[in-house]
Image 1 (cartoon, rainbow, N blue to C red):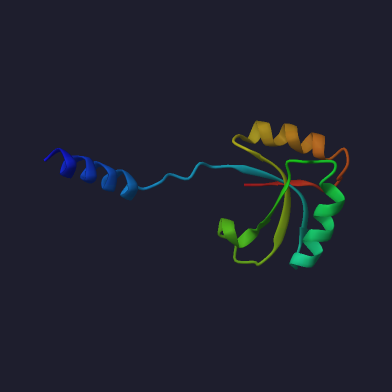
Image 2 (cartoon, rainbow, N blue to C red):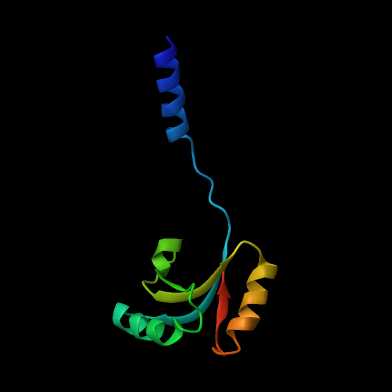
Length: 97
């Protein structure tokens, strides 16, 4: 009985819905093709070493665009603070929620 109970608990834990946490993305560059975003990321990676490339459709956008994200923040205030820093080198950086 104990094994069955443990197995049931594991199965229920795995099947439990996962909640998405809202985040704000500080976007330093965007492009229509992977080649373009790779070129942009090479230019920006030295200034923002924690940056990453993402495809906007991963976040539910209909457009198939790519973005180079300098920072991911868990609050609007934190995103604004990072945006101010990023805009010192990338004037047209913006926040995407």
